Image 1 (cartoon, rainbow, N blue to C red):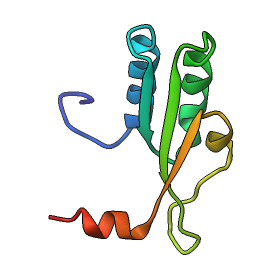
Image 2: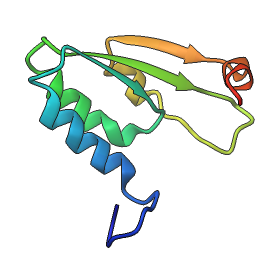
Image 3: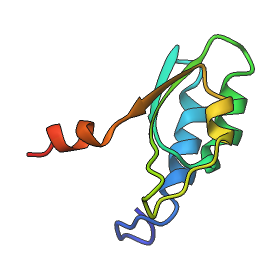
Length: 91
C-alpha cells in the first residue's frame, strides 16, 4: 500500500525488504519471480549460507515480459515453470 492505495508500483522493493528482514528466521525462501531487482536482496540473505533461495520462474521468448539470467545465477535451486502450469491452475 502506497499513500493509502493499493498499487503494483514498488512491490519488488517491498518484497526485497521483507526478504532481508526475515532472513534470520527462515531457512528457505521460495520466490516466484523473474525480476533482477531481487538480486541484491538475495545476495544479502545468502551471505550467511544458512538461507537457501529456491526460484520458480517462467520464461517465454514470445512474451512481453523479459527476464535476465542474472537472477538465475544467485539462487540455490531453479524450477522453471511451464505455460501448462498456469493453465492447469486457473479457477
